[in-house]
Length: 453
Image (cartoon, rainbow, N blue to C red; front, side, top):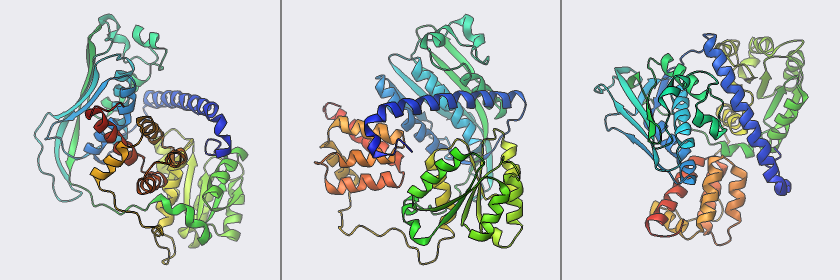
């Protein structure tokens, strides 16, 4: 919330340090919790249909800037036969690949990092939409031209908290990334293997069984850009949490978006306020004194009126089965603490969009019409902007920083109005990937044309 306050701009560097430190501690805690869950045998697969091609594209976009900062070549290659839609635990697969790519870039000083994906078995045509198709094996390989690993240190790679000599010298990481990745891959039916030579680089690879799926039926997405206009429809949100600081944070965030907010510090107060105030949404903490969130949810949902109230559970629980039990109690959705504002906004857009009055229309077009920008003219207009400004834009897009993106757009007086409008709209609609890929493309064009960048 402080980072979004324009009056605190002079303190941004300090706020960035606080935020990065918090992110680092959160990453460490999450890794330790994940390792504890694995050792307790409480990690389970959550298999769903995912877009494999999009997953790989997103990973390349995620690490491209990090690789460029070290002047490394990052390549993501997939064989033509790799299917687009597969059924697997997409969250665990993504985390494994993130861990392997992050390590590869971290320990590579020159050269490059490559992610290759191929099929070990022939892809067959999937059955009808949503049906299960052939079972195949997908092979993933992450290679680098980095420092390499000595043969006598190979045994340490997958031991929790153990680090190689190279890892210790880097003063980065906690020795949990690879052990967690190995456990995830084993859970998915594979085994991570490694080849490495000192000063010649490393290659980590694994294969997992997946099912080829047909493309799912798409559902229209509701833009979160509608949220700032919801105040005119008196959208009411009840925040239920026994911790005053948690309620304060949610109140500040929600009121800044135009919602009307009331607070309750336990389940009994929540039920009383729900009966008298009738909010559209309840953000319900699960662990509270007097009456916990699960019991309060069950009582509210037991009534006909309660069936029309959206209840989103907020919990710091580390276990997946807790999520299942919470949803079974009647909660409409689930958000783990700590959460990013964008995650909460997306949930509110998802649930409030279906309950808005019929007269609510999408945001009107601006009064001043702007010309439609085609891809070539967009790149041409971006090419006229300073490369340093574009690099700042890609950095903020990676950080999902909508406010600073808009400020940066407005800070360049020579920016064509149509382009400024487009970029600001993308920022307000949280289309950070679109901003990143578009501007990265313009930087690539500049490099190919011999411009500095």
